[in-house]
Image (cartoon, rainbow, N blue to C red; front, top):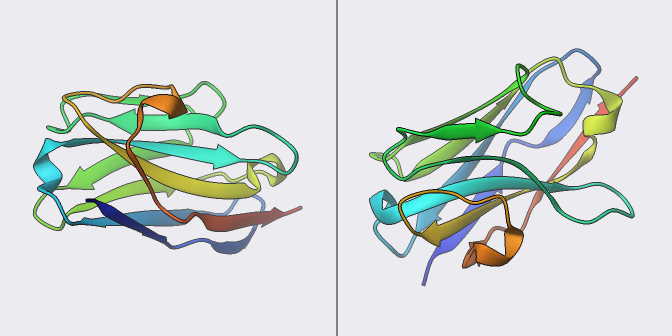
Length: 124
């Protein structure tokens, strides 16, 4: 069983930055590919981006491309979401997710494990 714990959320002004972390335990982190999702108020959970288990492949959705970066440190069992140039429309609960596979997927139904989420609020 894998446990995921996000941290780093909070309140930030538009144009600011936050770095979210997601620490994994319970299974070898190096076999997990990871995804970040977010859920805006009243909306479905959407894929923000993902990273393969080797970190050889990363992806960011168009609405965050150029602003958000995903990375991982397998020695620390942690995946990161660096968020720059934040906008009020980025306000959401951010979740990390894990799947036992070589690569990530954009479908939330293909992840086996989820964190509890961390709130990010961007003020204008």
